[in-house]
Image 1 (spheres, each protein chain N blue to C red):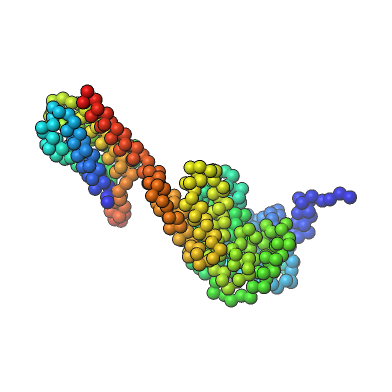
Image 2 (cartoon, one colour):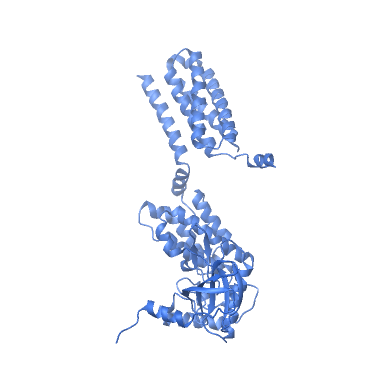
Amino acid sequence: MNKVMVGITLGAILGALDGMTAWFTPAVRAGIVGIVIGSTFKGIIAGILIGVFARKVHSLALGIVFGLGVGLVLAFIIAQLQHGYYFQVMLPGGMVGLIVGYATQKYGRAPELQNAASVR
Amino acid sequence: MKWLGDGTVDRLRANMQVPDLTGTRYRAIRYVASGGMAAIWLAEDTALKRNVALKVLDAEDLPQLESRLLREAHILATLEHPGIVPVHDAGRLPDGRVFYCMKFVEGQRLDEFLTTVAALPDRLRLMLRIAEPVAFAHSRGIIHRDLKPENVMVGPFGEVLVMDWGLGKILNEHSTESSAAIASADEQQRTPAAASSTNHGTVLGTPGYMAPEQLRGEVESIDQRTDIYGLGVILSVMIGSPAGGRAARRHRPILAICAKAMHPDPNQRYPAVQALTADIADFLAGSPISAYAESPVERMARLFDRHRTAVLLIAAYLVMRLLFILFSRR
Protein backbone atom coordinates (compact mmCIF):
# COMPACT_ATOMS: atom_id res chain seq x y z
CA MET A 1 0.00 0.00 0.00
CA ASN A 2 1.46 3.36 -0.96
CA LYS A 3 1.43 6.43 1.26
CA VAL A 4 -1.57 8.05 -0.44
CA MET A 5 -3.62 4.86 0.06
CA VAL A 6 -2.57 4.75 3.73
CA GLY A 7 -3.75 8.36 4.06
CA ILE A 8 -7.06 7.73 2.27
CA THR A 9 -7.81 4.54 4.24
CA LEU A 10 -6.98 5.97 7.64
CA GLY A 11 -8.61 9.31 6.83
CA ALA A 12 -11.81 7.57 5.74
CA ILE A 13 -11.96 5.27 8.78
CA LEU A 14 -11.24 8.00 11.33
CA GLY A 15 -13.48 10.46 9.44
CA ALA A 16 -16.38 8.01 9.49
CA LEU A 17 -15.77 7.29 13.17
CA ASP A 18 -15.66 11.01 13.79
CA GLY A 19 -18.99 11.50 12.04
CA MET A 20 -20.67 8.60 13.84
CA THR A 21 -20.00 10.15 17.22
CA ALA A 22 -22.43 12.91 16.23
CA TRP A 23 -25.18 10.39 17.03
CA PHE A 24 -24.49 11.07 20.71
CA THR A 25 -25.35 14.75 20.20
CA PRO A 26 -29.18 14.84 20.12
CA ALA A 27 -29.29 18.24 18.43
CA VAL A 28 -27.64 16.94 15.25
CA ARG A 29 -28.74 13.26 15.40
CA ALA A 30 -31.35 13.76 12.69
CA GLY A 31 -28.70 14.55 10.12
CA ILE A 32 -26.35 11.75 11.10
CA VAL A 33 -26.12 10.22 7.61
CA GLY A 34 -25.08 13.50 6.04
CA ILE A 35 -22.61 14.12 8.84
CA VAL A 36 -21.01 10.68 8.44
CA ILE A 37 -20.74 11.08 4.66
CA GLY A 38 -19.37 14.60 4.98
CA SER A 39 -16.92 13.59 7.68
CA THR A 40 -15.74 10.57 5.69
CA PHE A 41 -15.30 12.75 2.62
CA LYS A 42 -13.34 15.25 4.72
CA GLY A 43 -11.14 12.42 5.99
CA ILE A 44 -10.50 11.20 2.44
CA ILE A 45 -9.58 14.70 1.25
CA ALA A 46 -7.24 15.09 4.24
CA GLY A 47 -5.77 11.63 3.57
CA ILE A 48 -5.05 12.45 -0.09
CA LEU A 49 -3.41 15.79 0.74
CA ILE A 50 -1.33 14.36 3.60
CA GLY A 51 -0.45 11.21 1.63
CA VAL A 52 0.78 13.24 -1.35
CA PHE A 53 2.80 15.40 1.04
CA ALA A 54 4.35 12.26 2.57
CA ARG A 55 5.39 11.08 -0.90
CA LYS A 56 7.22 14.35 -1.49
CA VAL A 57 8.59 15.12 1.97
CA HIS A 58 10.20 12.44 4.14
CA SER A 59 10.12 14.06 7.56
CA LEU A 60 8.13 12.79 10.51
CA ALA A 61 7.97 16.20 12.17
CA LEU A 62 6.90 18.03 8.99
CA GLY A 63 4.40 15.28 8.19
CA ILE A 64 2.77 15.63 11.60
CA VAL A 65 2.68 19.44 11.38
CA PHE A 66 1.25 19.33 7.85
CA GLY A 67 -1.33 16.71 8.87
CA LEU A 68 -2.35 18.76 11.88
CA GLY A 69 -2.66 21.87 9.71
CA VAL A 70 -4.76 20.16 7.04
CA GLY A 71 -7.00 18.58 9.68
CA LEU A 72 -7.54 21.90 11.41
CA VAL A 73 -8.24 23.83 8.19
CA LEU A 74 -10.76 21.28 6.91
CA ALA A 75 -12.42 21.08 10.33
CA PHE A 76 -12.57 24.89 10.48
CA ILE A 77 -14.38 24.96 7.13
CA ILE A 78 -16.89 22.38 8.42
CA ALA A 79 -17.39 24.37 11.63
CA GLN A 80 -17.91 27.54 9.61
CA LEU A 81 -20.57 25.80 7.53
CA GLN A 82 -22.27 24.60 10.75
CA HIS A 83 -22.00 28.09 12.29
CA GLY A 84 -20.56 26.75 15.52
CA TYR A 85 -19.15 23.75 17.44
CA TYR A 86 -15.64 24.98 16.62
CA PHE A 87 -13.99 23.21 19.53
CA GLN A 88 -15.97 19.97 19.11
CA VAL A 89 -15.19 19.85 15.38
CA MET A 90 -11.68 21.29 15.19
CA LEU A 91 -10.05 19.36 18.01
CA PRO A 92 -10.93 15.89 16.65
CA GLY A 93 -10.34 17.09 13.09
CA GLY A 94 -6.86 18.30 13.98
CA MET A 95 -6.11 15.07 15.79
CA VAL A 96 -7.24 12.98 12.80
CA GLY A 97 -4.91 15.04 10.61
CA LEU A 98 -2.07 14.53 13.08
CA ILE A 99 -2.60 10.76 13.17
CA VAL A 100 -2.80 10.53 9.37
CA GLY A 101 0.32 12.71 9.10
CA TYR A 102 2.20 10.39 11.43
CA ALA A 103 0.93 7.23 9.75
CA THR A 104 1.75 8.35 6.20
CA GLN A 105 5.31 9.15 7.22
CA LYS A 106 5.79 5.90 9.11
CA TYR A 107 3.89 3.46 6.93
CA GLY A 108 3.24 2.93 3.28
CA ARG A 109 5.58 2.36 0.39
CA ALA A 110 7.63 5.36 -0.68
CA PRO A 111 7.93 5.92 -4.45
CA GLU A 112 11.62 4.90 -4.61
CA LEU A 113 11.53 3.47 -8.13
CA GLN A 114 9.91 6.59 -9.52
CA ASN A 115 12.59 8.70 -7.86
CA ALA A 116 15.33 6.48 -9.25
CA ALA A 117 13.81 6.76 -12.73
CA SER A 118 13.63 10.55 -12.51
CA VAL A 119 17.29 10.70 -11.41
CA ARG A 120 18.28 8.75 -14.50
CA MET B 1 64.51 -17.05 42.76
CA LYS B 2 62.52 -14.40 40.90
CA TRP B 3 59.93 -15.38 38.30
CA LEU B 4 59.65 -13.36 35.10
CA GLY B 5 56.31 -11.74 34.41
CA ASP B 6 54.25 -12.50 31.29
CA GLY B 7 55.10 -9.10 29.82
CA THR B 8 58.82 -9.68 30.28
CA VAL B 9 58.60 -13.11 28.70
CA ASP B 10 56.69 -11.63 25.75
CA ARG B 11 59.33 -8.92 25.29
CA LEU B 12 62.19 -11.43 25.44
CA ARG B 13 60.40 -13.70 23.01
CA ALA B 14 59.77 -10.81 20.64
CA ASN B 15 63.41 -9.71 20.77
CA MET B 16 64.55 -13.21 19.93
CA GLN B 17 62.22 -13.38 16.97
CA VAL B 18 62.72 -9.98 15.34
CA PRO B 19 62.29 -10.74 11.64
CA ASP B 20 65.23 -10.09 9.36
CA LEU B 21 63.82 -7.56 6.92
CA THR B 22 67.09 -6.57 5.26
CA GLY B 23 66.71 -6.21 1.54
CA THR B 24 62.92 -6.08 1.79
CA ARG B 25 60.63 -3.08 1.47
CA TYR B 26 59.62 -3.42 5.12
CA ARG B 27 61.05 -1.95 8.29
CA ALA B 28 59.97 -3.48 11.61
CA ILE B 29 58.46 -0.97 14.00
CA ARG B 30 57.25 -3.07 16.90
CA TYR B 31 56.01 -6.46 17.95
CA VAL B 32 52.23 -6.61 18.20
CA ALA B 33 51.09 -10.09 19.16
CA SER B 34 51.80 -13.77 18.81
CA GLY B 35 49.62 -16.67 17.79
CA GLY B 36 50.39 -20.34 17.95
CA MET B 37 52.61 -20.50 14.89
CA ALA B 38 53.39 -16.92 13.95
CA ALA B 39 53.99 -13.46 15.33
CA ILE B 40 52.44 -10.22 14.13
CA TRP B 41 54.74 -7.26 13.63
CA LEU B 42 53.87 -3.68 12.88
CA ALA B 43 56.13 -2.62 10.02
CA GLU B 44 56.52 0.25 7.64
CA ASP B 45 56.17 -0.40 3.94
CA THR B 46 59.00 1.89 2.86
CA ALA B 47 57.92 1.90 -0.78
CA LEU B 48 54.39 3.08 -0.11
CA LYS B 49 55.14 4.90 3.17
CA ARG B 50 52.41 3.21 5.13
CA ASN B 51 52.16 0.96 8.13
CA VAL B 52 51.35 -2.67 7.54
CA ALA B 53 51.15 -5.81 9.62
CA LEU B 54 53.57 -8.65 8.96
CA LYS B 55 52.61 -12.11 10.04
CA VAL B 56 55.90 -13.98 10.32
CA LEU B 57 56.24 -17.67 11.03
CA ASP B 58 57.95 -18.40 14.35
CA ALA B 59 60.40 -20.87 12.85
CA GLU B 60 61.94 -21.77 9.48
CA ASP B 61 62.08 -25.05 7.59
CA LEU B 62 58.77 -26.35 8.85
CA PRO B 63 56.98 -27.15 5.61
CA GLN B 64 53.65 -27.92 7.25
CA LEU B 65 53.55 -24.60 9.09
CA GLU B 66 54.79 -22.73 6.06
CA SER B 67 52.09 -24.17 3.86
CA ARG B 68 49.48 -23.34 6.49
CA LEU B 69 50.59 -19.70 6.71
CA LEU B 70 50.70 -19.36 2.94
CA ARG B 71 47.34 -21.05 2.72
CA GLU B 72 45.95 -18.43 5.13
CA ALA B 73 47.42 -15.70 2.93
CA HIS B 74 45.87 -17.35 -0.10
CA ILE B 75 42.47 -17.50 1.58
CA LEU B 76 42.69 -13.83 2.57
CA ALA B 77 43.70 -12.90 -0.95
CA THR B 78 40.71 -14.80 -2.30
CA LEU B 79 38.32 -12.98 0.00
CA GLU B 80 38.19 -9.36 -1.08
CA HIS B 81 35.58 -7.89 1.22
CA PRO B 82 35.46 -4.77 3.44
CA GLY B 83 34.95 -7.05 6.44
CA ILE B 84 38.05 -9.14 5.79
CA VAL B 85 41.56 -7.78 6.24
CA PRO B 86 43.28 -7.45 2.83
CA VAL B 87 46.59 -9.18 2.21
CA HIS B 88 49.21 -7.24 0.23
CA ASP B 89 52.19 -9.54 -0.13
CA ALA B 90 53.56 -12.95 0.83
CA GLY B 91 56.92 -14.63 0.59
CA ARG B 92 60.07 -15.64 2.44
CA LEU B 93 62.27 -13.32 4.51
CA PRO B 94 66.10 -13.33 4.31
CA ASP B 95 66.15 -15.31 7.58
CA GLY B 96 64.23 -18.08 5.82
CA ARG B 97 60.94 -17.54 7.57
CA VAL B 98 57.70 -17.38 5.61
CA PHE B 99 55.57 -14.27 6.05
CA TYR B 100 52.67 -12.39 4.63
CA CYS B 101 51.87 -8.72 4.74
CA MET B 102 48.40 -7.37 5.41
CA LYS B 103 46.64 -4.16 6.33
CA PHE B 104 47.41 -3.08 9.87
CA VAL B 105 44.10 -2.96 11.68
CA GLU B 106 43.78 -0.57 14.56
CA GLY B 107 40.78 -1.00 16.76
CA GLN B 108 39.33 -3.07 19.53
CA ARG B 109 38.60 -6.74 19.76
CA LEU B 110 34.87 -7.40 19.84
CA ASP B 111 34.94 -8.63 23.44
CA GLU B 112 36.55 -5.34 24.48
CA PHE B 113 34.37 -3.21 22.21
CA LEU B 114 31.18 -4.70 23.65
CA THR B 115 31.81 -2.92 26.94
CA THR B 116 31.06 0.34 25.09
CA VAL B 117 27.84 -0.89 23.44
CA ALA B 118 25.00 -1.31 25.90
CA ALA B 119 21.83 -1.37 23.82
CA LEU B 120 20.70 -4.73 22.45
CA PRO B 121 19.61 -3.33 19.03
CA ASP B 122 23.08 -1.79 18.56
CA ARG B 123 24.70 -5.10 19.42
CA LEU B 124 22.44 -6.94 17.01
CA ARG B 125 23.22 -4.50 14.21
CA LEU B 126 26.89 -5.15 14.95
CA MET B 127 26.19 -8.88 14.73
CA LEU B 128 24.67 -8.42 11.28
CA ARG B 129 27.88 -6.76 10.14
CA ILE B 130 29.99 -9.57 11.59
CA ALA B 131 27.94 -12.09 9.63
CA GLU B 132 28.43 -10.28 6.30
CA PRO B 133 32.06 -11.29 5.64
CA VAL B 134 31.34 -14.80 6.88
CA ALA B 135 28.47 -15.11 4.39
CA PHE B 136 30.74 -13.73 1.70
CA ALA B 137 33.43 -16.32 2.49
CA HIS B 138 30.82 -19.08 2.35
CA SER B 139 29.76 -17.85 -1.07
CA ARG B 140 33.39 -18.35 -2.11
CA GLY B 141 33.42 -21.85 -0.64
CA ILE B 142 35.54 -20.98 2.40
CA ILE B 143 34.65 -21.50 6.05
CA HIS B 144 36.39 -19.84 8.98
CA ARG B 145 36.21 -22.59 11.65
CA ASP B 146 37.42 -20.35 14.48
CA LEU B 147 34.78 -17.68 14.90
CA LYS B 148 34.88 -16.09 18.35
CA PRO B 149 34.73 -12.54 19.76
CA GLU B 150 38.54 -12.41 19.96
CA ASN B 151 38.73 -12.86 16.19
CA VAL B 152 36.51 -9.91 15.39
CA MET B 153 37.97 -6.39 15.32
CA VAL B 154 35.99 -3.18 15.39
CA GLY B 155 37.87 -0.26 13.88
CA PRO B 156 37.86 3.37 15.03
CA PHE B 157 35.18 4.24 12.45
CA GLY B 158 32.99 1.29 13.38
CA GLU B 159 34.26 -0.96 10.60
CA VAL B 160 33.99 -4.63 11.46
CA LEU B 161 36.70 -7.09 10.42
CA VAL B 162 36.68 -10.84 10.83
CA MET B 163 40.28 -11.86 11.52
CA ASP B 164 42.43 -14.97 11.81
CA TRP B 165 41.52 -17.16 8.87
CA GLY B 166 44.39 -19.49 9.77
CA LEU B 167 41.99 -22.38 10.27
CA GLY B 168 39.99 -21.50 7.18
CA LYS B 169 38.86 -24.46 5.14
CA ILE B 170 38.19 -24.54 1.44
CA LEU B 171 35.05 -26.61 1.26
CA ASN B 172 35.69 -28.52 -1.93
CA GLU B 173 39.18 -29.55 -0.81
CA HIS B 174 39.68 -33.00 0.68
CA SER B 175 41.77 -33.03 3.79
CA THR B 176 42.98 -35.59 6.27
CA GLU B 177 42.69 -33.50 9.37
CA SER B 178 40.36 -35.77 11.26
CA SER B 179 42.93 -37.22 13.61
CA ALA B 180 44.50 -33.81 14.16
CA ALA B 181 41.12 -32.41 15.11
CA ILE B 182 40.55 -35.16 17.63
CA ALA B 183 44.03 -34.55 19.01
CA SER B 184 43.12 -30.90 19.18
CA ALA B 185 40.10 -31.48 21.38
CA ASP B 186 41.97 -33.86 23.66
CA GLU B 187 44.94 -31.55 23.88
CA GLN B 188 42.78 -28.58 24.74
CA GLN B 189 41.04 -30.44 27.52
CA ARG B 190 44.41 -31.24 29.00
CA THR B 191 45.85 -27.77 28.55
CA PRO B 192 43.13 -25.22 29.24
CA ALA B 193 45.70 -22.43 29.48
CA ALA B 194 46.31 -22.72 25.78
CA ALA B 195 42.66 -22.70 24.96
CA SER B 196 42.52 -19.09 23.85
CA SER B 197 45.04 -19.46 21.06
CA THR B 198 45.00 -21.41 17.86
CA ASN B 199 48.07 -23.60 17.91
CA HIS B 200 49.12 -25.41 14.82
CA GLY B 201 48.62 -29.13 14.92
CA THR B 202 46.96 -29.15 18.26
CA VAL B 203 44.02 -26.81 17.87
CA LEU B 204 41.54 -26.64 15.04
CA GLY B 205 39.15 -24.34 16.77
CA THR B 206 38.74 -22.91 20.23
CA PRO B 207 37.01 -24.94 22.94
CA GLY B 208 33.88 -23.18 24.08
CA TYR B 209 33.37 -21.82 20.57
CA MET B 210 33.74 -25.04 18.60
CA ALA B 211 30.75 -26.78 17.10
CA PRO B 212 30.16 -30.33 18.39
CA GLU B 213 31.16 -31.87 15.06
CA GLN B 214 34.44 -29.93 15.27
CA LEU B 215 35.05 -31.19 18.80
CA ARG B 216 34.37 -34.74 17.65
CA GLY B 217 36.82 -34.28 14.81
CA GLU B 218 34.24 -35.07 12.14
CA VAL B 219 36.05 -33.14 9.47
CA GLU B 220 33.82 -34.44 6.70
CA SER B 221 30.72 -32.97 8.31
CA ILE B 222 32.28 -29.54 8.80
CA ASP B 223 30.69 -27.00 6.49
CA GLN B 224 29.16 -23.52 6.67
CA ARG B 225 26.87 -24.67 9.47
CA THR B 226 29.98 -25.03 11.63
CA ASP B 227 30.54 -21.28 11.20
CA ILE B 228 26.86 -20.68 11.92
CA TYR B 229 27.46 -22.39 15.26
CA GLY B 230 30.37 -19.97 15.85
CA LEU B 231 28.17 -17.01 14.94
CA GLY B 232 25.58 -18.32 17.38
CA VAL B 233 28.19 -18.38 20.13
CA ILE B 234 29.25 -14.82 19.29
CA LEU B 235 25.59 -13.78 19.33
CA SER B 236 25.07 -15.38 22.73
CA VAL B 237 28.14 -13.53 24.05
CA MET B 238 26.79 -10.28 22.60
CA ILE B 239 23.34 -10.53 24.15
CA GLY B 240 24.72 -11.70 27.49
CA SER B 241 22.40 -13.00 30.18
CA PRO B 242 19.24 -10.92 30.28
CA ALA B 243 17.83 -10.09 33.68
CA GLY B 244 14.51 -11.63 34.64
CA GLY B 245 11.04 -10.23 34.02
CA ARG B 246 10.02 -8.25 30.95
CA ALA B 247 13.56 -8.03 29.54
CA ALA B 248 13.91 -11.80 29.63
CA ARG B 249 10.55 -12.24 27.89
CA ARG B 250 11.61 -9.81 25.18
CA HIS B 251 14.86 -11.73 24.75
CA ARG B 252 13.11 -15.05 24.12
CA PRO B 253 13.12 -14.75 20.31
CA ILE B 254 16.79 -13.79 20.20
CA LEU B 255 17.64 -16.62 22.60
CA ALA B 256 15.76 -18.92 20.23
CA ILE B 257 17.92 -17.61 17.36
CA CYS B 258 21.02 -18.45 19.41
CA ALA B 259 19.66 -21.90 20.23
CA LYS B 260 18.90 -22.63 16.58
CA ALA B 261 22.31 -21.40 15.42
CA MET B 262 24.02 -23.46 18.13
CA HIS B 263 21.95 -26.61 17.77
CA PRO B 264 24.13 -29.71 18.40
CA ASP B 265 22.76 -31.26 15.20
CA PRO B 266 24.00 -29.29 12.19
CA ASN B 267 20.84 -30.23 10.27
CA GLN B 268 18.75 -28.37 12.82
CA ARG B 269 20.79 -25.16 12.51
CA TYR B 270 20.19 -22.37 10.03
CA PRO B 271 21.17 -23.71 6.62
CA ALA B 272 22.97 -20.48 5.67
CA VAL B 273 24.24 -17.30 7.29
CA GLN B 274 21.62 -15.33 5.37
CA ALA B 275 18.84 -17.23 7.17
CA LEU B 276 20.41 -16.36 10.52
CA THR B 277 20.79 -12.68 9.64
CA ALA B 278 17.25 -12.58 8.24
CA ASP B 279 15.93 -13.69 11.64
CA ILE B 280 18.04 -11.09 13.45
CA ALA B 281 16.92 -8.36 11.05
CA ASP B 282 13.29 -9.43 11.48
CA PHE B 283 13.69 -9.33 15.26
CA LEU B 284 15.11 -5.81 14.99
CA ALA B 285 12.21 -4.75 12.75
CA GLY B 286 9.65 -6.16 15.20
CA SER B 287 8.59 -8.89 12.76
CA PRO B 288 8.07 -12.57 13.58
CA ILE B 289 11.12 -14.82 13.25
CA SER B 290 11.46 -18.36 11.97
CA ALA B 291 13.23 -19.70 15.07
CA TYR B 292 10.50 -18.86 17.56
CA ALA B 293 6.79 -19.67 17.62
CA GLU B 294 5.28 -16.83 19.63
CA SER B 295 2.08 -17.08 21.65
CA PRO B 296 -0.90 -14.81 20.81
CA VAL B 297 -0.06 -12.64 23.84
CA GLU B 298 3.55 -12.30 22.72
CA ARG B 299 2.35 -11.47 19.21
CA MET B 300 0.13 -8.70 20.57
CA ALA B 301 2.98 -7.38 22.71
CA ARG B 302 5.33 -7.42 19.72
CA LEU B 303 2.82 -5.61 17.50
CA PHE B 304 2.22 -3.07 20.23
CA ASP B 305 5.97 -2.51 20.59
CA ARG B 306 6.33 -2.15 16.84
CA HIS B 307 3.44 0.29 16.40
CA ARG B 308 3.51 1.84 19.86
CA THR B 309 3.15 5.49 18.80
CA ALA B 310 0.41 4.83 16.27
CA VAL B 311 -1.56 2.74 18.78
CA LEU B 312 -1.17 5.38 21.50
CA LEU B 313 -2.25 8.17 19.12
CA ILE B 314 -5.38 6.32 18.07
CA ALA B 315 -6.10 5.38 21.70
CA ALA B 316 -5.74 9.06 22.68
CA TYR B 317 -8.12 10.02 19.87
CA LEU B 318 -10.71 7.45 21.00
CA VAL B 319 -10.43 8.58 24.63
CA MET B 320 -10.93 12.18 23.50
CA ARG B 321 -14.05 11.20 21.52
CA LEU B 322 -15.35 9.27 24.54
CA LEU B 323 -14.85 12.31 26.78
CA PHE B 324 -16.68 14.50 24.24
CA ILE B 325 -19.61 12.09 24.25
CA LEU B 326 -19.70 11.97 28.06
CA PHE B 327 -19.59 15.76 28.40
CA SER B 328 -22.16 16.32 25.65
CA ARG B 329 -24.62 14.04 27.52
CA ARG B 330 -24.45 16.11 30.72
